[in-house]
Length: 255
Image (cartoon, rainbow, N blue to C red; front, side):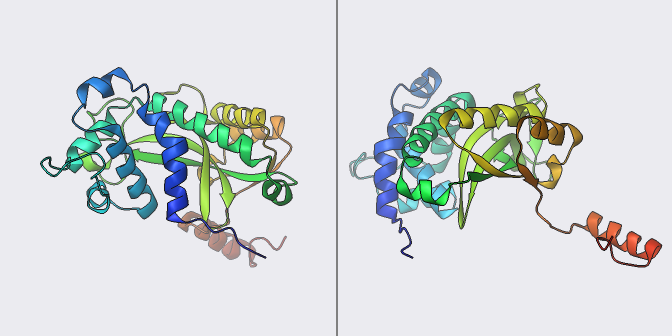
């Protein structure tokens, strides 16, 4: 079987032609006025490098060549200014523009022979809570990932992604921190949005944190799919198995 090979050049070409225009045209007013010193092409290209390499913004600056935008007499923007430029974007604007790109690509992808042959029964999706670094002033939505320092401040998002070997494709995102809706309602909203595009769902993977009565009840009510949870033995699960063995005299799961 011949594997599809994706080169950095192809990713860069797709990024420049399909994604970048959605984030450099019709800039939000606060971005356009407050951060004129850093062109959005540079900020977004730096973000692309950090995403592909899993590195810092400073590393992205060092890796990128900005000759296209800067002459020799001008200094490259600092990581601080690029970070502030990206933070100036309202998160709702980022989500809506990203969602537009994804929906357009899914419409094209699901018509391909590769997708039809590999997803005849539907796609397997997973829900997860993603914490995104937040460097603004602390507010009612701020959560902390590790410790309670400025560098660990985050905003939490519910993400829905296609499960693929070796990588993940995030289909949709909803900000948990500003929504009054329960997680189950946000899940149904995201599933409905993707179903309108034409995606079929085969399995739904949930993290342990989503195993709640209301979540399972809503999914069972609206979607007749197998809902799975990764079989990872946490300390709490290990303790429960040990207690079961001590009380019953045999291993959990044999009955």
